[in-house]
Length: 245
Image 1 (cartoon, one colour):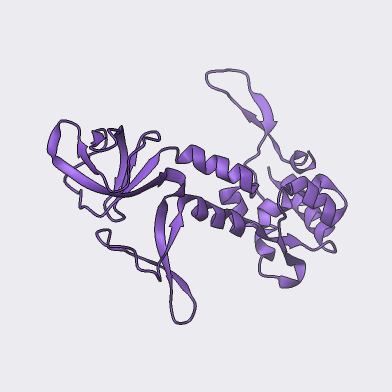
Image 2 (cartoon, rainbow, N blue to C red; image 1 turned 30 degrees about the vertical axis):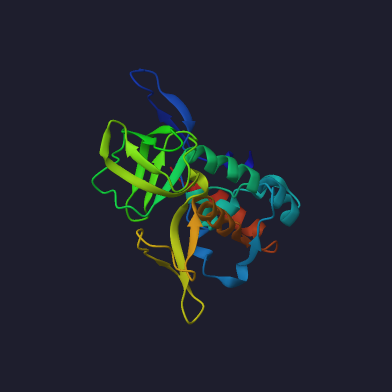
């Protein structure tokens, strides 16, 4: 790939090897693009389309696939989070990260249902192991997808003094991660809730899936070097790499 052609060659000893191996120093970096971030005339805003790869976008904008790497150099959020993915891939990723079941209760449980304990539904007779908990949201995460029933009493296995009443349950990836509200100026802000009462109607829950969807959508908003300036900046970047010793 053209991006790697001008990286400097350096000698390196791998492990206990005596002989030096000459490889490209891929950690070398030229700060050309960082210097232009505030020069508005050199770039414009762009929103990445669904399933639009970096090489495809490069060809679309510049007539060649070779300048895909410029998107990452001038957009810090792409360096941190990576290129945005399709919605289907996003859903699959979030499901993998949050594969279990989320139980919601209005019963305080700060002193019960510890991680690793087994809990049992007194009506459904379903059982599961606790894998996570958030007392601020009234959430208890249990392994797998057990069939607990809303409204039933759930107790710690073998201990009838440790109980909660189940309000609702959902797949973990669809459970609320935090809650938002809107102020008088239509600005969205995060708000704490009281887990022992119903969530007010003006408060909107944001699920794990929605949280990552929002991040992915923000990653689609990037700056691109204008076609009139791309050749000059690529040349400066290449020349800068050649000067690194």
